[in-house]
Length: 633
Ligand code: FUL
Image (tube, rainbow, N blue to C red; front, side, top):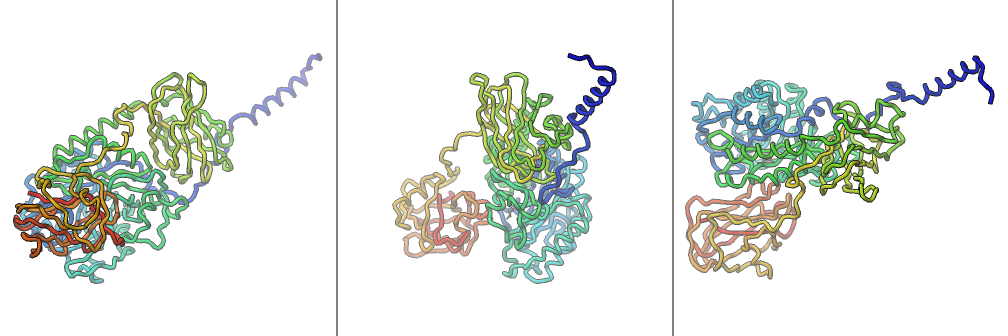
């Protein structure tokens, strides 16, 4: 073996250095991925990071115990005895929420601020001698508590005399201008798509272009919610869940609020949608949207609310949770206690990220550069991310937890400023006894945030496999957690019972119509429904005369199922001569929120037979669904 002379040593060193130089991770010189498809605007990005905020339904309905007022309510009924928006804000803040959106004007047209453009407002009410302004108090309270402030405004107005005429569009725009220029920053404007008849029996052709431009004129950074955005979209149900697959892109061409794409499209978005319109899940903490004494005992359980959280925030959607104020103008203790319990449960669940400061490695790193290394997934910095080369659409990341621990939850985030890309992935854990990888979950989209829960496993490593991606995957965060067992998904629930205290007993009842073999199910107290021909009424013989003050109908609990929307209800003593108790009456909001409908009569009623005649269904079916019918003492 010859010994190298000085010159050779020199050449060798140069070669070594050059080799080292080229093999070395070249920080900074590798171009970042180009954005893929539609991407969020700056306000949409800020909005997405808010994740969880409060809806407050409040207005005349709070005092009439209605879900939809008809606009004829006397403004004198609006008189909260102890309204305190600071209590709402303090509650939202303590619950970990980031904002409050208030129903400034619901379908009944009543304005919670003294609008110049209506005579159906707080100034016509006795509250604070007509000098009150709920928006003023709430916007100030939000500011004080560091919360953002948002407004819900229903274009459908069952009170305004101009509704149903072309002039109304400008009036609504003026109304918007008032709300959006007098109360500081408004982060979200919530446009309800519901469009029914106004006081003249006419519907309105809405000028959405005018409404949107009015919003942006006063609040250029506001995110506009509607069925189709443009800021964010309705998730397609009021039950609190986004699709398992949930793209933040949507095709909006040809659609409008109230004329939306199919509900499952709203639920899942469009894989190749042309616009960035992320989902927002709106759901009430109680069965209805407005406060009612009857639902004080029906605030959703921790299980239900955690289920909602994981099915919304955990599926790439923001969560807008409604917590209605009561007749005092306060959030009821039952609701606020539950919110605190949920806050605590989420705190316990996510306080310790088992992957933080551990090791993440991937064989596929963009340009082999440290700038895009898998370690970025664990550094807590939102803007640093792991990415692969443009042509690498499947990839894996291994998370080394360094010691064996219990795990059951993985939280993933895509870096959505560059678009949403991942279409399918799975998660594996290392079986330390058998020395093999075992799959614990497989799912489709990730988006801004995806939380996957699985049966608890003890392991020291996990692997995330991106199995399908529309462009090179770009992820900025992976978290690994061990949730208390109580917060893991529960087995399918048993049959839901739908009876309430105060329902008349049904032991002696006979159902005279329809003549179906399973007809007894409509009085068995359980939640499963039967289908009845649209032409057939429900007729019941109670055997004896009874006194009652109302009736209830439990529809099929699925949004847009063929439930009864409009009906007649009749009573009789002999089964021949009928008296109308309700004529052409509506089950309000039953299409979107198909819960038990309690309907009360003007005066208590006596009778032996009742008849429910369907007049209109929530869809075009020739059959309607009914889970239960009964009378309220
Ligand atoms: C719906 C309305 O009809 C309900 O009353 C409620 O306000 C809900 C949030 O939006 O469209």
